[in-house]
Length: 202
Image 1 (tube, rainbow, N blue to C red):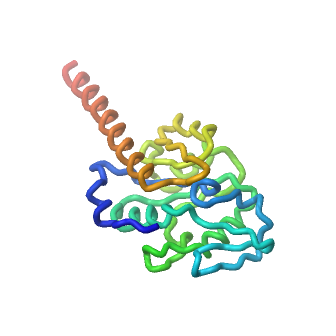
Image 2: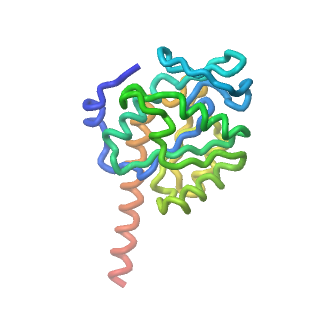
Image 3: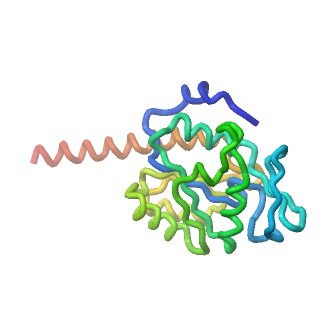
């Protein structure tokens, strides 16, 4: 499914996150990759699907390519990150190097991602690592994940958006998360400005 990127640009809020981070399993693609049979993988270009050695499919949720295209086209200052606790990170990387983003001329998913934290651990550790490696504060990140337990990253200031397992991240959810980020960022900035005014009067 493709979207009119130019029309979507008109719906973007003023304040945008410096990084959008995605989980992988049941957020970007329709499976737990460490529960598949594993490589060698075969890529079907016609369907944009990866088959494992047991002929089981791994495909991106239908809105993910367009969401990546929107970020890369309309959000030039926003990075894409991956935070996944899969037990088979090498399988995940291999799959990302095969799956394509048709809206960007058929480049690989992997080539469009700026930062990776893929290893068994808590998402708290993933985001602390992302913040340290990129210099981007956690409160400038939006995170999409299909497990409520990973909402713990809100303690770090991350803007968390829960994903329904059966559909992955949709374009509507993505745009709503950006609007919510804009709203919360404005509220935080207003509080900071108010506090600074009070201090200056003392």
